[in-house]
Amino acid sequence: MSKTSSAAISHQIYPGTVTRPILSEEESDRFVTKNYLTDWNPEEITIPVTPDYVVKTGESIQAAVNEAINAGGSTRKFIKIEVGIYR
Image: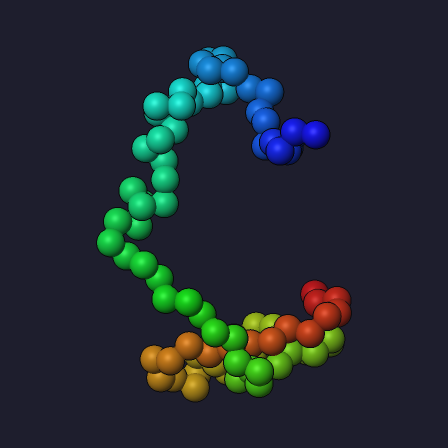
């Protein structure tokens, strides 16, 4: 059994077509996270056990967002959206 997943193997071949070009391996080497983020390394987000706001089925997600904004401050606000149907 091969260690390479068939899902990881692309059927696309360089250079592709005019409407759907495929990057060469050398070209694709430039498109890595460090080239986009440079020295920025985002901090890990720890989700609290108790969120700041909870939205339940039938309630408005936008109302919770508005409430979080209106609360002011510069700290991260956590909004838990419970399973349900929202319109």
